[in-house]
Image 1: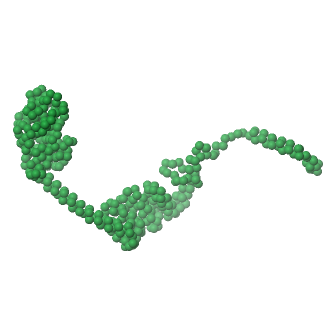
Image 2: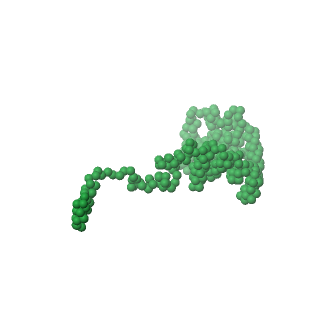
Image 3: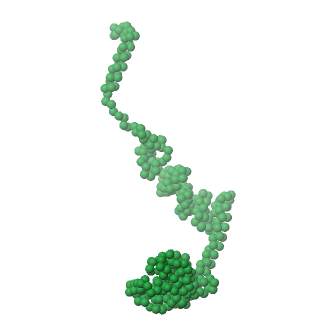
Length: 396
């Protein structure tokens, strides 16, 4: 041993440097000889931020439905929501905390879900239940689910009758639903608890004004409905007095407003009505079809006193755009109407008034309007129209 110590003590500086270099070379050779393996347990370089956001210690938002959840987060969630690890009240409070978080970030649907889960925990603490129902009411209110919000606020009041927040939320919902009596009652109850509640005072005044306006509008609507009903009965009496027939009126059925509404689009806003000038004469919508061209003209308001000549004069005040031969003019056309019930056509006397034509036994109002066919007289077009579907011609 003494010799070895003596030998070390006799080493020169150069000897020490050479030994150190030798040891470094041997270490490098040892490391180079090790099996090289890629480290695969870390986060991929191109996704480290994504993985960071998933980690419970670094995430900036709670996982949303459908998101991939980190195993550690699942473990924390289990500790927080496991009924074996928490009492019912603790569970309810945990869900309330979540709901408040979502409310703060305006995630109202998630807030409704959280408060609902808290209620499902069946906590026996009435104070906690009152808060859960009221908070869910607030979330529903911001989602404009006013009926559900009102129901929840009223449920909160069953657990805490003097709960000001629930009284106020219920009053707001009642006002949105036009439940003015209920809103008034809730505002008054709230003011009994807190007489200085400014918003409740304003809402109470607004509700009383809205109720007065609503009742006034209801009276107006009732008066208008009564006026319309009286007017319709008078119109129906006039139609029945003239023995007007409708091809789409079933036997033993009464005339209705729907029956009188024209089915032709250009006429639909102009149903038959009594002349406002005398309150007795009828004003009719009418369609004039040109079979040759497969098109129609519409007269929205024809007095029953007008003759067919008057109607044609108006129709042909300007030439038909498609009438290249100038065949459609007064004195050169014939007018027909069809009785679809018996499958025949009737030639119309041009000197007759619409009232006379309508009163004919074979004439039926069709689709809420008068329907006539116009063809050039003594032409193949007229003959083709008459013999179409082998319809017999009847002269009125």
